[in-house]
Length: 92
Image 1 (cartoon, rainbow, N blue to C red):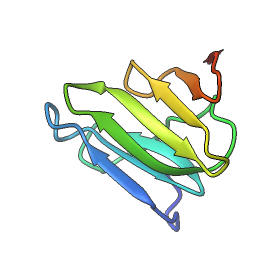
Image 2 (image 1 turned 45 degrees about the horizontal axis):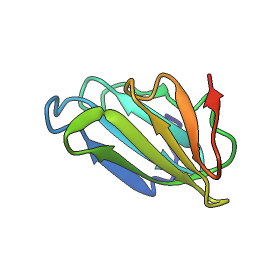
Image 3 (image 1 turned 90 degrees about the horizontal axis):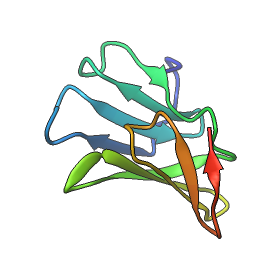
Image 4 (image 1 turned 90 degrees about the vertical axis):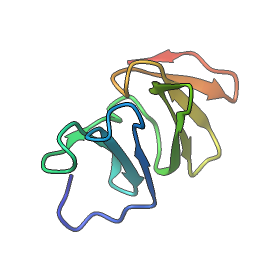
């Protein structure tokens, strides 16, 4: 994650607290070591993320809302994304 990145949204995996997601103008990033290192997790997303959330019953499922209002979903911890709304399709 860029050192000067603006963060608009943060989500922490309740089952694995060392796994954290952040979203902002620079994209979506995931850390598996409590924020020591970050990896980009939005390669297939189109646009700028403004909010993210985890499914409380399955934290591997991540939802991201973009500035254009589109909703994206990942069921594998932000490795692959699918456009949910408007009428979606797979993205990798």
